[in-house]
Length: 269
Image (cartoon, rainbow, N blue to C red; front, side, top):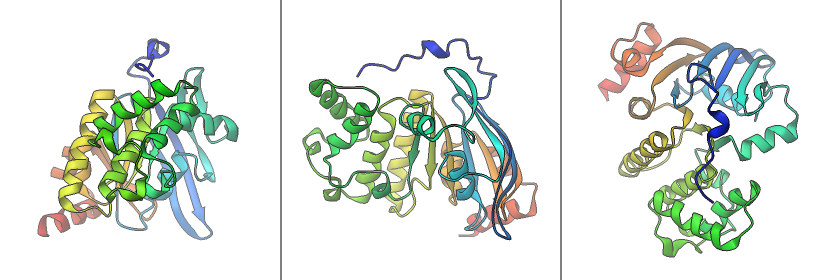
């Protein structure tokens, strides 16, 4: 599979949001999941969402990615046919978009991999889902992508269960990015990994995001992750966005008391 053809996006101005979220709300009975969340995400931009456990960040990500249906609000994505509200999109169309324009990197790579299929097969399945049919080309692309995520080519026929947690996460990233999505959702992508493995994975992610010009939304509790990867930062508490802005600005000069507490607690560790 060759380079992704971006010519269809030539008429999309960089000032046009790739994703525009308006008034997104999700409740679980009396408990607020996320409340009246609005923001724009532009092409090539990385947005970090942080907050403590239960702050609503994972609920918001699930609503954005179509895994949960919000109670109200719009999630407008700039498709090849123009802006579409993915909340009211037909399920078949949303699944098709999840195989092409979107990707989702799970915290636990086992949730994003076929554990009974080889490493090459995991990457190849995603290619076949968008129409690739020639075995030799699929395998060559899989080898290329395994190399990009620092997995040796002689491991192409190994099953993911034979890999370490860090290697499984890198394989999941290869599986997701091989089709050249324009928007990637990441849910705690370094969670549960050793510190040294986290650092290596973050360097890899940063390089791929910049190289491919990806837009990404990253949910994490780790401020070091968003410091390294995110252009803008959104801080959530109790389902509400309490502060947002440029990442360095928010982390270096937090205005909300909750953000100040988050930053100071990290500095005191």
